[in-house]
Image (cartoon, rainbow, N blue to C red):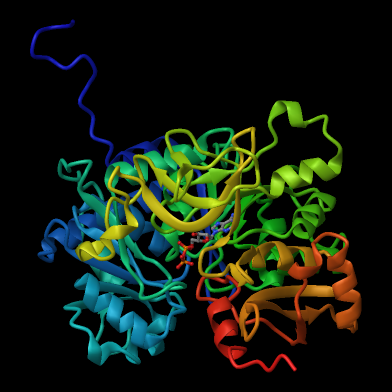
Length: 538
Ligand code: ADP
C-alpha cells in the first residue's frame, strides 16, 4: 500500500513543543495568576509561549544538556507554567518538587534525581535553605513572586529568561525521550521517581480533552488548584494551552476562602483537586450562601482519594458538577466515573452509587482486576488488585527501583484493591496497605470513613486498622465534629449500623480537632496507624 518504503501516515513525533505551537492559535487567551500579596497578574498564552521559548534557549546557552534535570520548587503560577512548556522544549527534563515534603525527603529526592538546575520561588527560599547544604544543584534561579530583589548568592530567573531568544525553535526531539518527572509522595514507602515521556504527556493531555473525561475546551476557564508539583498538576498545565482554555493559577493561596473568591471572580468553569480541599470549599459555600456566585455548569474533577458521597451531593446542591476520577503518579490520567446514558433514568440513590465508583478507564488506557487465580468475575463483589497499562503509564521507576511493580506480561500493579461490576465499572475498595484485616476478613476503611462523613454532625473522618489481640486488627475511627456539634460514639455506631454488618463497625471513636494530611492533602493514615498502634482496647 502507498509508495513502497514510505510511511502511509506522517511520522509526526508527539512532543510537548507541539503544545507550544498549538498555544499560538490561542495567543490572546488569558492566563491569570495570584501573587503572595494576593494581587492578580494577567498575561496571555502568547506571552507565556514567548517566555517559555526564551527559557528553553537560555537553558541551552547555559550548557543544560538533553535529559539533564531542571527542578522547580514553586507554587502554581505563570513562571511555573513557563517551566512546564520551556524546560522540555530545551530537551531537558522538568522535575517538579513537592514543597510540602520534609527537607530531609526533599534533599533525598533532589540527589536521587540528580537535579542540575533549580528554579525556586523567592518565598520558598527559607525552605530551600533548610536543605541547600545537602544537595549538589549547580545553578539556582529565583522567581521574584513577591516583587522583592533577588537575594545575594542567587541568580535571577527573570534575567535568565531575558537572556534567551523568544523566537527559539525547539530542536527535533524523540517522542519517547523523557520530558518531565515527579516523585510519588511516599504514602507507602520511600518516594520513587516517575519519568514521563513527551508522547505520554501529549497523549495524557489529549485524554483530558475528551468529553467523557475532563472535557476541557476553549470555552473553559480552568482554575488549576492541583499543585503543579503533584502528578504533573494532573496534566492541566498542558491540557489548558492545548485546548485554548483560560487558565487561572492560585499561587500559594489554596485555603477555601481564597479558592471560593477566585472561582467566583474569574468565573471558572473547571477545577480539580483532592476531596479534602473541596470539602473545605463546599462547607464554606454552604455556610455563606450567595456570597460567591459560581459560573453555571462549573465542573470539579475530584481524585487522589475516594470522595465521600456527601461531598458529591453537596456539590450538586450548589450547582457544581463533580467529575470523579482515579489516577496516580505512575498513571497520570486514569479511570473516570460518569453516568452512562441508561443510568440517567435511575433513582438518585443508585446514581450516587455509580458516581462514587471510580468508573471506566479513559480512552487508550486499559485496566484489569486480578486475584491469585486470574481476572476476577465482574460481579461487583470479588476483590483483586487493580492493574493498568497504556501509552502514558510508567514503564519503570527512575534507576530501576521496585521492578516487581510491573507484571511479567507488562501491566502496572497499582497496589489498590478493586472490584468490577457487570457494567465494567471499577470500584476501589481500599489501598492494600489501608485495608483492615479482621479475623481473616477484609474491612474497607474508605467505605467506613465516607459513610461517617455523611453524618450531619461529622466534618471529617478517617478509619484505620489498629492491632488487636484476638482479631488481628480492628477499625478505629478518628472523627472531627462539625463546629458546635458533639456526636457520641453510640450514635455514630448506630448510624453506620444501618449500612454495614456489625463486625465492620469501628470498636473505638476518637474525637479530634483535625486529621493529619499527607503532602498532597490526603488523610495521612500511616501517621494515624502509628499514633494508635498501641491503643488499649480495654
Ligand atoms: P501516593 O501514592 O504517594 O499517595 P498518588 O497521588 O500517586 O501518590 O496516589 C495514588 C493513589 O491515590 C492511588 O493508588 C489510590 O490509592 C488513591 N486514589 C487516587 N484517586 C482515587 C480515587 N478517585 N478513589 C480512591 N482512591 C484514589
